[in-house]
Length: 251
Image (cartoon, rainbow, N blue to C red):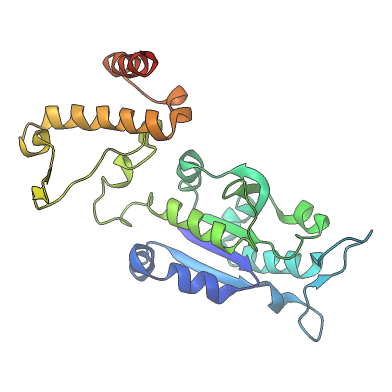
Protein backbone atom coordinates (compact mmCIF):
# COMPACT_ATOMS: atom_id res chain seq x y z
CA UNK A 1 0.00 0.00 0.00
CA UNK A 2 1.23 3.49 -0.82
CA UNK A 3 0.81 6.49 1.47
CA UNK A 4 1.53 10.05 0.36
CA UNK A 5 1.61 12.92 2.85
CA UNK A 6 1.57 16.51 1.62
CA UNK A 7 3.05 18.60 4.41
CA UNK A 8 5.21 21.56 5.37
CA UNK A 9 7.22 19.27 7.64
CA UNK A 10 8.20 16.14 5.69
CA UNK A 11 11.00 15.20 8.12
CA UNK A 12 8.48 14.98 10.94
CA UNK A 13 6.41 12.45 9.01
CA UNK A 14 9.36 10.42 7.76
CA UNK A 15 11.05 10.21 11.16
CA UNK A 16 7.81 9.36 12.91
CA UNK A 17 6.77 6.52 10.61
CA UNK A 18 10.00 4.86 9.52
CA UNK A 19 10.45 3.07 12.84
CA UNK A 20 9.13 0.00 14.66
CA UNK A 21 6.48 -2.13 12.92
CA UNK A 22 5.70 0.43 10.22
CA UNK A 23 9.37 0.95 9.44
CA UNK A 24 9.95 -2.79 9.09
CA UNK A 25 6.94 -3.07 6.79
CA UNK A 26 8.43 -0.34 4.60
CA UNK A 27 11.74 -2.22 4.48
CA UNK A 28 9.89 -5.37 3.41
CA UNK A 29 8.13 -3.49 0.60
CA UNK A 30 4.67 -3.99 2.11
CA UNK A 31 4.18 -0.24 2.48
CA UNK A 32 5.62 2.90 0.96
CA UNK A 33 5.44 6.29 2.67
CA UNK A 34 6.24 9.40 0.66
CA UNK A 35 6.33 12.78 2.39
CA UNK A 36 6.01 15.65 -0.08
CA UNK A 37 7.08 19.15 0.95
CA UNK A 38 4.42 21.63 -0.15
CA UNK A 39 7.04 24.40 -0.05
CA UNK A 40 8.75 22.79 -3.03
CA UNK A 41 5.77 23.86 -5.12
CA UNK A 42 5.80 27.51 -4.11
CA UNK A 43 6.56 29.98 -6.88
CA UNK A 44 7.67 32.60 -4.37
CA UNK A 45 11.44 33.14 -4.27
CA UNK A 46 11.36 32.76 -0.49
CA UNK A 47 9.24 29.58 -0.73
CA UNK A 48 6.33 31.19 1.10
CA UNK A 49 3.14 29.18 1.05
CA UNK A 50 0.89 31.40 3.20
CA UNK A 51 -0.65 34.86 3.10
CA UNK A 52 -3.04 37.09 5.03
CA UNK A 53 -6.73 36.13 4.93
CA UNK A 54 -9.13 38.20 2.88
CA UNK A 55 -11.63 39.92 5.14
CA UNK A 56 -9.15 40.20 7.97
CA UNK A 57 -8.69 38.02 10.99
CA UNK A 58 -5.91 36.42 12.98
CA UNK A 59 -3.23 34.22 11.51
CA UNK A 60 -2.26 33.22 8.01
CA UNK A 61 -3.84 30.97 5.38
CA UNK A 62 -2.06 28.48 3.13
CA UNK A 63 -2.31 29.64 -0.49
CA UNK A 64 -4.05 27.46 -3.09
CA UNK A 65 -1.27 27.31 -5.70
CA UNK A 66 1.37 25.30 -3.83
CA UNK A 67 -1.23 22.89 -2.47
CA UNK A 68 -2.81 22.20 -5.86
CA UNK A 69 0.56 21.81 -7.57
CA UNK A 70 1.79 19.47 -4.83
CA UNK A 71 -1.30 17.32 -5.27
CA UNK A 72 -0.84 17.23 -9.05
CA UNK A 73 2.74 16.08 -8.48
CA UNK A 74 1.66 13.32 -6.09
CA UNK A 75 -1.04 12.07 -8.42
CA UNK A 76 1.59 11.90 -11.13
CA UNK A 77 3.40 9.31 -9.01
CA UNK A 78 0.35 7.03 -9.06
CA UNK A 79 -0.36 4.76 -12.06
CA UNK A 80 -2.86 6.38 -14.42
CA UNK A 81 -5.48 3.65 -13.99
CA UNK A 82 -5.68 4.37 -10.22
CA UNK A 83 -5.09 8.11 -10.25
CA UNK A 84 -8.62 9.46 -10.52
CA UNK A 85 -10.09 7.22 -7.85
CA UNK A 86 -7.35 7.90 -5.29
CA UNK A 87 -8.65 9.46 -2.09
CA UNK A 88 -7.20 12.83 -1.07
CA UNK A 89 -7.86 13.22 2.64
CA UNK A 90 -7.65 16.61 4.33
CA UNK A 91 -6.88 16.42 8.06
CA UNK A 92 -9.08 18.94 9.84
CA UNK A 93 -11.11 19.19 13.07
CA UNK A 94 -14.11 19.80 10.80
CA UNK A 95 -13.88 16.27 9.38
CA UNK A 96 -15.58 13.13 10.60
CA UNK A 97 -13.72 11.56 13.50
CA UNK A 98 -11.48 8.72 12.35
CA UNK A 99 -12.30 5.27 13.76
CA UNK A 100 -11.55 1.59 13.22
CA UNK A 101 -14.31 1.20 10.66
CA UNK A 102 -12.76 3.96 8.57
CA UNK A 103 -9.32 2.33 8.94
CA UNK A 104 -10.75 -0.93 7.59
CA UNK A 105 -12.34 0.94 4.67
CA UNK A 106 -9.11 2.73 3.76
CA UNK A 107 -7.05 -0.47 4.09
CA UNK A 108 -8.78 -1.75 0.94
CA UNK A 109 -7.21 1.04 -1.13
CA UNK A 110 -3.90 0.83 -2.98
CA UNK A 111 -3.04 4.53 -2.52
CA UNK A 112 -3.99 7.20 0.00
CA UNK A 113 -3.03 10.87 -0.11
CA UNK A 114 -3.11 12.93 3.10
CA UNK A 115 -3.12 16.73 3.07
CA UNK A 116 -1.81 18.39 6.24
CA UNK A 117 -2.88 21.96 6.90
CA UNK A 118 -1.19 24.58 9.08
CA UNK A 119 -1.70 28.14 10.27
CA UNK A 120 -5.40 29.04 10.07
CA UNK A 121 -6.08 26.46 7.39
CA UNK A 122 -5.95 26.16 3.61
CA UNK A 123 -7.56 28.38 0.99
CA UNK A 124 -11.01 26.93 0.33
CA UNK A 125 -10.45 26.87 -3.41
CA UNK A 126 -7.60 24.40 -3.06
CA UNK A 127 -9.76 22.14 -0.93
CA UNK A 128 -12.56 22.26 -3.48
CA UNK A 129 -10.14 21.37 -6.28
CA UNK A 130 -8.23 18.47 -4.74
CA UNK A 131 -9.86 17.06 -1.59
CA UNK A 132 -12.19 14.07 -1.79
CA UNK A 133 -12.88 13.68 1.94
CA UNK A 134 -11.98 15.07 5.34
CA UNK A 135 -10.99 13.35 8.55
CA UNK A 136 -10.32 14.37 12.14
CA UNK A 137 -8.25 12.77 14.88
CA UNK A 138 -10.75 13.97 17.46
CA UNK A 139 -12.63 16.95 18.80
CA UNK A 140 -9.62 19.10 19.61
CA UNK A 141 -7.28 21.40 17.70
CA UNK A 142 -3.65 20.60 16.83
CA UNK A 143 -0.98 22.77 15.23
CA UNK A 144 -1.09 20.79 12.00
CA UNK A 145 -2.27 17.65 10.27
CA UNK A 146 0.97 15.67 10.56
CA UNK A 147 0.19 13.86 13.82
CA UNK A 148 -3.33 12.86 12.68
CA UNK A 149 -1.92 11.64 9.35
CA UNK A 150 0.68 9.55 11.16
CA UNK A 151 -1.79 7.93 13.54
CA UNK A 152 -4.20 7.15 10.68
CA UNK A 153 -1.41 5.63 8.59
CA UNK A 154 -0.40 3.52 11.59
CA UNK A 155 -3.96 2.29 12.13
CA UNK A 156 -4.48 1.46 8.46
CA UNK A 157 -1.07 -0.18 8.06
CA UNK A 158 -1.78 -2.70 10.81
CA UNK A 159 -4.59 -4.08 8.66
CA UNK A 160 -2.37 -4.72 5.64
CA UNK A 161 -1.48 -8.44 5.33
CA UNK A 162 2.06 -9.17 6.49
CA UNK A 163 2.60 -5.93 8.40
CA UNK A 164 2.03 -7.53 11.81
CA UNK A 165 4.16 -10.52 12.75
CA UNK A 166 1.08 -12.22 14.18
CA UNK A 167 -1.45 -12.29 11.37
CA UNK A 168 -4.40 -12.57 13.77
CA UNK A 169 -3.35 -9.62 15.95
CA UNK A 170 -5.27 -6.98 14.02
CA UNK A 171 -8.42 -9.09 14.05
CA UNK A 172 -8.68 -9.40 17.82
CA UNK A 173 -7.56 -5.99 19.07
CA UNK A 174 -9.66 -3.20 20.51
CA UNK A 175 -12.82 -2.25 18.60
CA UNK A 176 -13.19 -5.65 16.95
CA UNK A 177 -16.99 -6.18 16.89
CA UNK A 178 -17.19 -2.72 18.55
CA UNK A 179 -15.76 -4.11 21.78
CA UNK A 180 -12.63 -3.08 23.63
CA UNK A 181 -9.89 -5.67 23.97
CA UNK A 182 -9.88 -8.05 26.95
CA UNK A 183 -7.12 -7.85 29.63
CA UNK A 184 -3.77 -9.40 28.71
CA UNK A 185 -1.28 -11.21 30.98
CA UNK A 186 2.18 -12.73 30.70
CA UNK A 187 4.71 -14.36 33.09
CA UNK A 188 5.14 -14.55 36.01
CA UNK A 189 1.90 -16.21 37.13
CA UNK A 190 2.12 -14.39 40.46
CA UNK A 191 3.38 -10.82 40.63
CA UNK A 192 3.52 -9.49 44.19
CA UNK A 193 0.39 -11.44 45.11
CA UNK A 194 -1.50 -10.52 41.94
CA UNK A 195 -2.20 -13.73 40.05
CA UNK A 196 -3.08 -14.40 36.45
CA UNK A 197 -6.75 -15.49 36.19
CA UNK A 198 -6.93 -19.28 36.53
CA UNK A 199 -8.97 -19.71 33.36
CA UNK A 200 -5.99 -18.51 31.29
CA UNK A 201 -3.84 -21.25 32.79
CA UNK A 202 -6.39 -24.00 32.22
CA UNK A 203 -5.62 -24.75 28.58
CA UNK A 204 -9.38 -24.98 27.94
CA UNK A 205 -9.69 -22.90 24.79
CA UNK A 206 -13.48 -22.61 24.77
CA UNK A 207 -13.52 -21.36 28.37
CA UNK A 208 -10.69 -18.94 27.64
CA UNK A 209 -12.50 -17.54 24.62
CA UNK A 210 -15.74 -17.13 26.60
CA UNK A 211 -13.85 -15.40 29.45
CA UNK A 212 -12.16 -13.03 27.02
CA UNK A 213 -15.44 -12.08 25.36
CA UNK A 214 -17.06 -11.44 28.72
CA UNK A 215 -14.11 -9.34 29.82
CA UNK A 216 -14.35 -7.34 26.61
CA UNK A 217 -18.02 -6.69 27.28
CA UNK A 218 -17.28 -5.68 30.90
CA UNK A 219 -14.49 -3.33 29.84
CA UNK A 220 -16.54 -1.76 27.05
CA UNK A 221 -19.46 -1.17 29.41
CA UNK A 222 -17.15 0.50 31.89
CA UNK A 223 -14.99 2.57 29.54
CA UNK A 224 -16.88 3.04 26.26
CA UNK A 225 -20.56 2.16 26.75
CA UNK A 226 -21.38 4.15 23.61
CA UNK A 227 -19.86 1.33 21.53
CA UNK A 228 -22.24 -1.31 22.80
CA UNK A 229 -25.17 -0.11 20.71
CA UNK A 230 -23.42 -1.48 17.62
CA UNK A 231 -21.50 -4.36 19.18
CA UNK A 232 -21.74 -7.76 17.48
CA UNK A 233 -22.96 -9.96 20.35
CA UNK A 234 -24.43 -13.43 20.45
CA UNK A 235 -27.70 -14.02 22.29
CA UNK A 236 -25.82 -15.38 25.32
CA UNK A 237 -23.54 -12.37 25.31
CA UNK A 238 -26.51 -10.03 25.20
CA UNK A 239 -27.94 -11.82 28.21
CA UNK A 240 -24.60 -11.44 29.96
CA UNK A 241 -24.63 -7.71 29.19
CA UNK A 242 -28.17 -7.37 30.53
CA UNK A 243 -27.05 -9.05 33.76
CA UNK A 244 -24.23 -6.50 34.09
CA UNK A 245 -26.61 -3.63 33.44
CA UNK A 246 -29.08 -4.90 36.02
CA UNK A 247 -26.32 -5.12 38.61
CA UNK A 248 -25.43 -1.50 37.94
CA UNK A 249 -28.98 -0.37 38.67
CA UNK A 250 -29.40 -2.44 41.84
CA UNK A 251 -29.37 -0.39 45.06
